[in-house]
Image 1 (cartoon, helix red, strand yellow):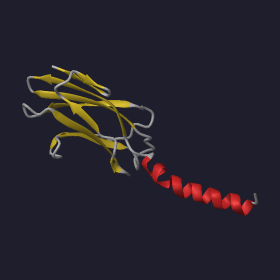
Image 2: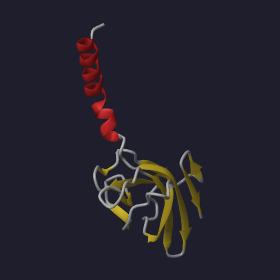
Image 3: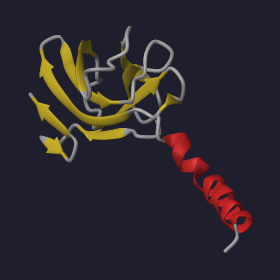
Image 4: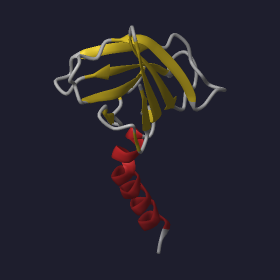
Length: 134
């Protein structure tokens, strides 16, 4: 196979993989813990992201209901380059009584809201990536 053909295959492979590499920078939600107390819920979320500095880092997460209404939002004010994965908490998250499902979403400065969303069934004590304590 000549160099020209190998180069064409390399370019074609690169173009085919482009959609997958574009997603590689998204924030991953590794785990969440929900603790119910008298003031609402304390939510702790563990994120992983290839923070590279002030221009590209995971800058927040939120808890939403199935309709997208924000129940709680945690802003992250600085990169966590040397601390991966990392966990941050938010207290006094108000989840309406009777609501069975919430969703955790994560955001970074470059890619926006990650397609990696964590669906949490509040009627259970735990799931694959979450735990509920009452």
